[in-house]
Amino acid sequence: MSLASKKPILVENKIMSRIRILSTKSTIEATGIQRKLLENEIRAMVINKMDSAYGSAVGDIEIYVEESDKIQAEKIIKAYFQD
Image 1 (spheres, rainbow, N blue to C red):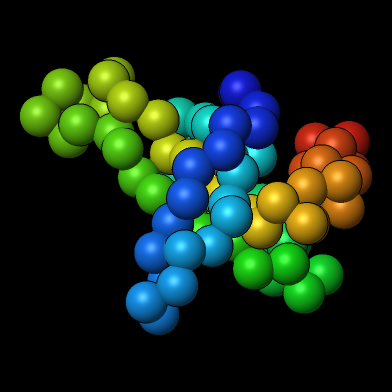
Image 2 (image 1 turned 90 degrees about the vertical axis):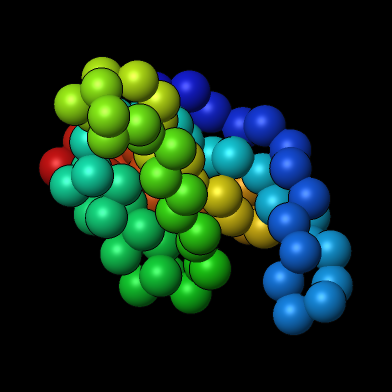
């Protein structure tokens, strides 16, 4: 799991300031975290960068949030892993 890298994302013809808040190899984990973030009104975008040709051994699933939501998202993710 790695945290926080900045990456501008084009959404509806606007550049949004999003940061990578989490990187994982687990689809279940990424989906659960995305759901928790959305429940707390934090828009989260999941990008699957895993290469299926290698049996999911190469690449990660990344979760991005708005830079302004970073602190709240980190708290939610920390609580997710404590449950």
